[in-house]
Image 1 (cartoon, helix red, strand yellow):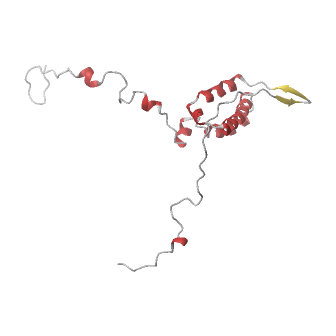
Image 2 (cartoon, rainbow, N blue to C red):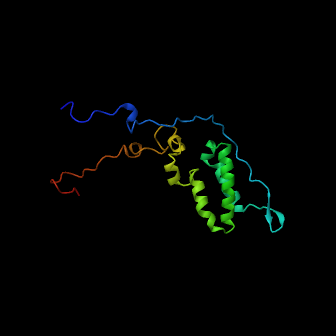
Length: 163
């Protein structure tokens, strides 16, 4: 029955208006090339010594350079990942307290299938691998078995198999 109940709130007083209250900032995209792992010195005692990257961290760094995600990294992404490489190096030198921070940082880049799902990343290569034909390149079941016909070995009674 129309007219029953309280009157609707004025638009300015409604709790939900289903729109963003903060406007979105659109940035100009600039892809950046991956930097090399830098050479630098660290303090050890009272002297400066050359820092040596663990081989495992060098392999890890190359993995990120070669990853599909890196096509979408800007300069600030590479700088953040470079700082993350230092954490990776700490972990591979035996500092296990670095593991949690490393896990959080690489998750932001889509390191695992779960991270990529959360970030809504998918691999496009799977869609284009068949050239858009929807086929794997192997003969289809129809092509492989299209000429096969059922064998009928004479008449048999319903429910019994022919011999």
